Image (cartoon, rainbow, N blue to C red; front, side, top):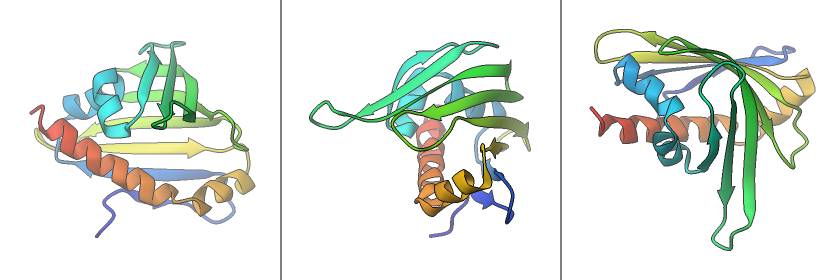
Length: 155
């Protein structure tokens, strides 16, 4: 199956560029990133906190069937411009990864299509390369496929 989410990771750099075009209007693509009920569906996680504004915070958590926390991430919004861009920190707890800086840009292509560009900056080249050794590309593509499926039902 073709990966619709593209990841560009230039050798020796400490950042990556993720791009994906969606068959969704811009407003729905943006809502998928700011409405907790929608985030929970396509990310398969719980939204514990979401303050969609400059200096607002966010926190996501996933538990297994026994109630054990298997994933927890949080951060702060540094820029929040509806239907245009979100700049945030992203920090996973209980991992060797340092906080990263993410720049999300939302772009209208047509009335029914839009594009998401995510520029992620890591603390070091080594940490970025370590992340890329995980099934990162496969996971984000699967999440974006689910985002498309879930949000298409809202049209």
